[in-house]
Image (cartoon, rainbow, N blue to C red):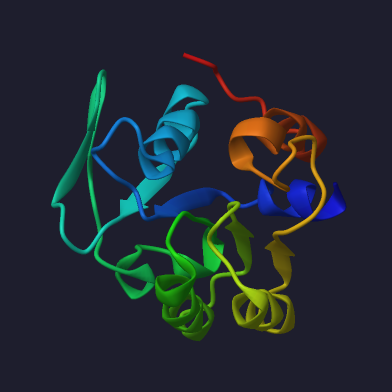
Length: 152
């Protein structure tokens, strides 16, 4: 839980793999940040914006396009083949913390994340059956970090 507390101590957040498809986790996780009134930027190289029921978010194509990458914790919701180059770019621009959602990593991605980031959350743990997930473990993490979010 210490890593989760550090992840939520960032002043900004981003979701790589954000989607307009309400059935996808990229949509659900962006919506979770929005519902908790957290400053979030969606990353999607193909969609110019992600539309939630109460707000539209402009996307950026990649970690290097984030306004303050060194102050941004990154939630990753991409397939493993996309995740590794994404993490390499995220590391190169100084992102301090990453949260790899279930299904986004393989052994190589996990190894890279753990070796290159101050905080890397992934794999076994958390309260869900599939490992650490913002949707399952985020509330507790916000609390541990002392973040008082306004749940919409």
